[in-house]
Amino acid sequence: MKSFDVPIIYRSPLISAVKKKRKEMDKLKKDFTPTLLDFGPVQIFLSRHFGFCYGVENAIEIAFRTVNENPGKRIFLLSEMIHNPQVNADLQAHGAIFLQDTNGKQLVSFDELTADDIVIIPAFGTTLAIEKKLKQVGIQTEKYNTTCPFVEKVWNRSESIAQKKYSIVIHGKPTHEETRATFSHAAHNAPCVVVKDLQEARELAGYITGEKQASQFYTEFEGQYSAGFDVSKDLQRIGVVNQTTMLASDTQSIADFLKQVMLQHYQLSESTIEERFADTRDTLCYATNDNQTAVSGMLETEADLAIVIGGYKSSNTSHLVELCEERLPTYFISSEEKILSAKDILHYNFHTKEEILTADYLPAKDPVKILITSGASCPDALVEGVINKLVSYFPVTTNTAQLIEQFI
Ligand code: SF4
Image 1 (tube, rainbow, N blue to C red):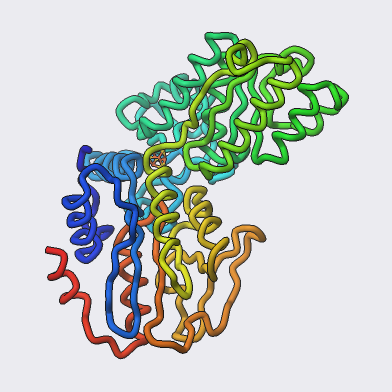
Image 2 (tube, protein in one colour; image 1 turned 30 degrees about the horizontal axis):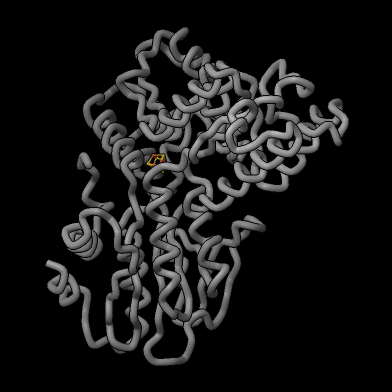
């Protein structure tokens, strides 16, 4: 896979050495066991896959290059570049300005833009309406468009489903930038509706079978269906795509469930199901698949706790947390600064959307075994920072430099 020119401050000598070694030893990516960093009284088990993905590295490279190559120009980021506060803050420090916040709230009016400005489209992509607005101002978006090819793949998939006259059900978070962008592109080609989870898919099924009153749909799914959506006919043929970073098992459950509803309601069989349900595999990206599978592999290891590092708004990171917390105490942190001491840790509860303080997160035993992973928008340098902070609380027998030697 292509390698990118990402600022060195985001890299970590330790993590780079580990990743390089694992890649050399497992070129076909079949081994999902974690990497053991054995510091003696504390053992760190690093997930096989984690950290910056293709789309994020591509976006970071383009964004920093644009900032460096265009001194004196006004450079706007359509919204948060990626869901990592450090990367976004670094870009702002280089003079980049956000046009919208992550919920689509306008921070700088589009009216203030001129044809001379540069606007960078983030890795999540953007809506057709925003693309049009920028073109109307005379801003060339092509050169500074960092939309991830794996997001574009979802748009292409929905277009091909639409061509076969299926409506599109998008499994995603309705307010997430990527889902809003995918919704906009999908709605251009076919009726579409967003479901955020299996419960919403169940509610949607009530309209497919006619158990629920059609008129109720428009309030229940307000803001989640395309203009002109006719619930009495637009749910008769459907296909499912998803936000690239959803939990694989959730998307599978939703697709299986809706397929089953169509099978029963229309009395179809496996050979005739295509009349009503498009045969789509999930549209999760490779990084989501790799990172989630690697977490499952990591969870095979007996451990005392898990630490997941990433931005609190990061969808893919929250799903890694979800997987870990089913099995063991899990702490979702944005950087090593959240580890306050050997006793206290500040961590994010993404269910309640609040940061909480937990005491005695490190058990009094020897060795303490800690699982670690990070989201696709988290710099490896932050992971190394977390490891160093944890290790500093133990009388270790090996230091980071010695460990790097083992992986070179
Ligand atoms: S998580 Fe996947 S879709 Fe999103 S930017 Fe990364 S590679 Fe692209």
